[in-house]
Amino acid sequence: FSSLNVNKLVRPELNMNCLVYALKQAKIDDKIIDLYRVHCISRYQKIKLIDEVSKSCNIRIQVKSGELVRKCHANTIMKSIGSISKDAIEINLFLYRDTNMKGDHYFLDIDLPITPFYLKNREELNKYALENNLSIDNMFDKQRKKGNNCYTKPGAKDTIKFSELILYIRDHNGFKSYSLSDVLHLPSDLSDYVSNNLESLEYLDYEVKDIKLESKNKKFKQKILPTYYYADFEASTQRIHQAYCVSYSKRNSNQICNKYGNKCVEEFLNELNNNSVIYFHNLKYDSCFLAEYGINKCIKKDGKTMKINLIYNKKKITFKDSYSMISTALNQFPKMFGLRNLQKELYPYNYYTQERIQNNIGTISEAGEYEIQKWTEAEYKLFNENIYKIESCKIDENHFNMMLYCKLYCNQDVRILKEGHTQFRIDNLSSLNIDVDKFISISALAYNYFTTHVYSKIKDLKQYSGKVREYIQGTVYGGRCMTRDNKKWHVRDELYDYDACSLYPSAIHRLKLATGKPILIPKNLLNSTILNHIMLEQRLEPTNERYI
Image (cartoon, rainbow, N blue to C red; front, top):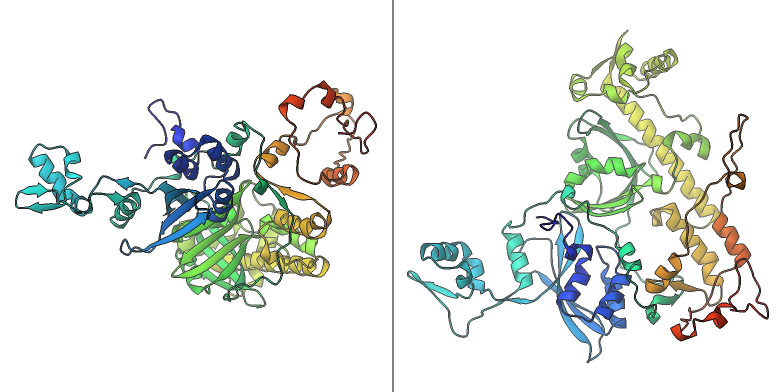
C-alpha cells in the first residue's frame, strides 16, 4: 500500500473521503458532490448523516454491508437510505469495515468482468495462462476447465460484484496490514478543504434546523445495564512501555482488585462483565495496553483519547477518559472534591524495570535514584513510612517487596479517581440534574446544559450546519495576548496576570444571538447602497441609516 504517487505527493483520490470518491466514480453532478463534501467532512461517515443529505439531493443509495464474522458470501445486509422518490438517482454502494483503522469504507459496487469460476480457481487458471503463454486477463471470462483447456460457457454468469471480490479477498486473508505511519500524513478532517472550496453560498433547508430536545418518552430497546469500574495501569517505562499491574474497583463496592505480572491486562479483561464501562484518568496512555485486544471504535480529539469500544471474548467493553470530564491532575482530586485521608502516594516509576519486577526485591536506598528528579531525604523518609504501613512489604532494613508496594500505590490512585469522580457525578446530579455517565467530555455536558436551559428557550433560534456553518465559522478568531498600548515593556517589578474568562458568554449576553434562517443577498444587490446601511460592530439597535 502506498498513499503517495510517483512524485511523492498524496494521491488526489485520498484527499477526499471514500463516500465522495464513490460518488465521483458514479458520475454524480459536481454541485451535488459539493453538498456531500460540506456535510460529510470527516473521513468516516455516519449512515444517518448520509441518509439526510441524500434525501435533500434526491439520491437513493442501496448499501450492502458485510458482517465482521467470516462466513460465506451470503453474510451481507442490504439497506436503502436517502430519497424514496421514483425519479431519484440510484447508486449501489458496498460498506466495508476496516479492522485496521476501525473505520467504515464505502465503495461503488459495480459489476466486474470476472467470472465466479475464475475467482475460485484463480491460482490454477493463472498457472494455466503462464504455461500456455497467455495473458492472465484472458482467464477472467473463463467459466469451466476441461482437461487441458479452459472454456467460456454460454449463458453462465460472466461478472461479479465488487463487493463479492472484497469479501473473497477478506475471507482468504488477501489483505495486507498497513501501519499507522503509512497513513498519518493523510488528513482525518477535511474541513479546511471544504471551507476553501465553497463556490456557492446557496444552502439546503436541511442545513438550518430548529433546536429540539430529545423526547424523554422515546422508547429504547431493553439493554443490559452497564457495570461501572474505575481502573489504573502501572507500566515499565524502559523502551516499549509494558503494563505489569492493574487495579480496578466496581462502583458501589469497597473492594479494589489487582492483577500483577505480564498477563495482567488479559486477566483484567477476563474479569470484566459484558457491557462494562471503565474509567481511566488519561485514557490516551492506558489505551496503549488495550489496543492489541481488538479496539472496535475510538473517539479522539485534541490529543485526547476520549472513549474506546472493545469487543473481547464476545463481551462489549467501553473505556472512558475521566480526564476529558475533569481536566486536572489526579493529585488535585482530594483538594478539589474534599476527599479526606486520601493523598497520591510516592512511587519510583523508573525503578520498576522488567528484570526487577521478575525478581520482586527492591533496594529502598536506590528506588528514587532513577527518577528525573532524584528523591530528597524527605521523600525517602515518606517512602520508608509507606513501606512500613504495608503488611509484609518490608523484607529487611534496605529491601522491600515491589509487588506489594505497587499494589498500594495503584490502589490509592484508583481510590482517589473513584471517590473524586463519584463526588463529581453526585454534584452534577444534585445541582444540574445531569448524569455525567451519559457524556464523554465536559464540553458535551456543557452543550447539553445550554441546549436544555438556553438555546431551546430562545424563539426561532436555529442550528446551522454545512455551508452556513462553514461561512459563519470564518468569523471566529482565536485568543490574543498583548501588552499595554501594544508596545514592548521592560519591567523589573512583579507582574499580575489578569485573564479575562467567559468572553463568549459575555459577548452573547451583550450582543444577543442571531435568530432565524440566514438570507442570501444576491450578487447584483451587493453594492454601496446596501453596504452603507449595514449596522456597525458593537451596535445593538438599528438606526435610520444603519438598519441591516
